[in-house]
Length: 206
DNA sequence: AGAGTGATCATG
DNA sequence: ATGATCACTCTC
Image (cartoon, rainbow, N blue to C red):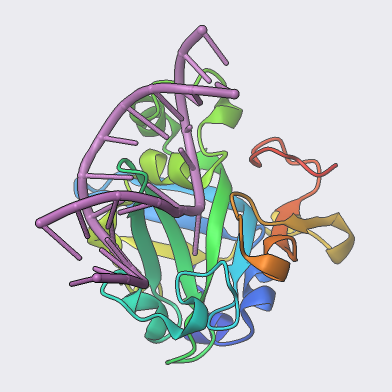
């Protein structure tokens, strides 16, 4: 059985982490032992203090974003719009509040348990094609904020099959989704996705 | 394009 | 305390 990616995977530049996450496998173990998993196909990098679109922009440090200030390799899960959760992985170093948002996965394990959690989905490609959708599908909520992804308790990331990992030319890059009023950071190319993968969120960035 | 939904955050 | 905002999703 594969082991979780090591701490060193996360302890580096957040843009490198966001790119290297593509093709890796996100795994969730439910309280009853059921295993759910999918291949990461889309991410975004949030670059910390200078990044005007990040929760930690300008050095903001609050109860919500505290996890981003901690050591790398932990999950930063936050609640937004009164109903949605989004999951990030903390990268960089302690006190360097950067994180990579997981925006979409291609579900591969536990589909029978994922469908009922995503009642509005009509196609497989609607199951996890967005940051809040995949949290619904894998039952990721604030209880998992701060979870150590390297410990491998209930949530971790393990190496994906070599065939799933994109070569650099297969990675499409574009501006992050849902960002406004962040000046030059609004349009910087910090969104990464596997070109041609049907499970990414729109826009697909041919 | 608009509604839904409530925690979070900067003001004061 | 209060009001605006929000790294979104669904339905029309």
